[in-house]
Image 1: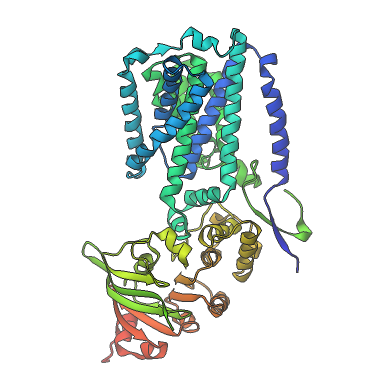
Image 2: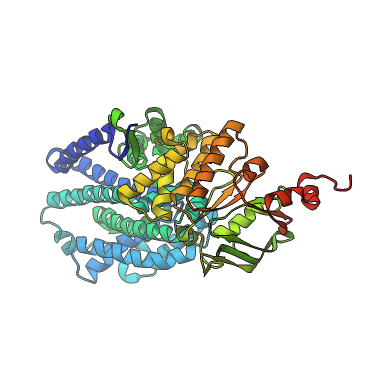
Length: 340
Length: 242
């Protein structure tokens, strides 16, 4: 009899890892080879990638379909402004502090909205985000409803030259995307990640097998909220200007993010990456057509949901049985010890 | 023998629908008992109450010496209660191996190679070894039922609750299943088995409980129960006076 053993890496995942490292080196050097506009666009892509990856963890795995994550994007943005302007913190420190504060704020919110189920939960999170928007619009020292710009001395504290600042903002965005993907991947590989994946597929069976569903969801909600706030801080560090409508925009920070995750493939790590690339490809080619661009996005979303409910990555995975992030366990016997 | 599970005066209703009506019984350590009753009698609800998927309106459940009436479902599994679902609930996006691994890691608290080795043993015992890398969502009904069993066994339960695990199987498949359950029982696991395939049930259990409309109406040795006119009337629809 052959002895069976368990492995997690596959040939596809090893190749993907090498390509990812090479791509990362090329991207990290972008300030030397890319133009200003391209650098800005790529920075935006990385931040959307991070947001999509976080929303996917929360909605795709933990089943928390929130349409209110703009609450934390805006919160993180406003914390950047408040803590640098009134606290005298360095912008990067302020952004990280914003993440910690968001984690603290997210706990009572979770206790409140976790009482709601399904569509009611979604609406509840949206209401919370609106409360955030209206509250920050009341703070006159942050510009009230019309918002404010990041003071020149705060901007200068990042780097002396404009190109230096733009490079820094780019690297922070790239770093944030890498950290978020790395953290989500590392989390999913642990026993808690296994529990979360089980919850994704069947809550009733998961709870019967010893998984504390409420607590697992709470952990995911708190962690994603904290990271979402950090990404929010980085978004408004790029923009240098904040207003309640921009900070708490459901369109920009939630609708587009959901679109990315759904067309890419919800409940997979690869999905948000593919979705982000598709979304920006569509946006850059169709942006000149005004409203027709949004109509096209809607049409794409409807077609994908009807024809490929598991997204583009779901189609690829079902056809080729591959996985770029090695999360699966593969049982092999000694005589077929071949990666695939 | 001391009782592993003791259910006393357990009641549960949804509006006018009564699924458990002052039900009381005890299951001895190492016993194997079967539960019979017509469709809608409250058999699965009884399992839901024992596993904590439902909270009773009244009554008490004691397991392994501790009152677990208010203990959440996840904790009960860690204490040693695992079940199979009548309608299989596989983790569809995960492989067969990963499904069972959830039981081993979360339920039994194993980790690393130890958990993996235990899962491989369970897959071998339940005949799923050749499907280990298959996504559970694409399994046939028989394999889904096997997976229900494997996942519950991976949690190393002291008390295993089987809910119509033999329903829909061919005779040959049923024989293999009975063999597996007998082995699990022989290894010391206490079993409560809900089943309509009576011959499968009788091959394993040493006691039967019959329920109807949420009420326990008979309890005793399988032969006595199966010969009881009252049970025949309720369960088989036989008129005792005919």
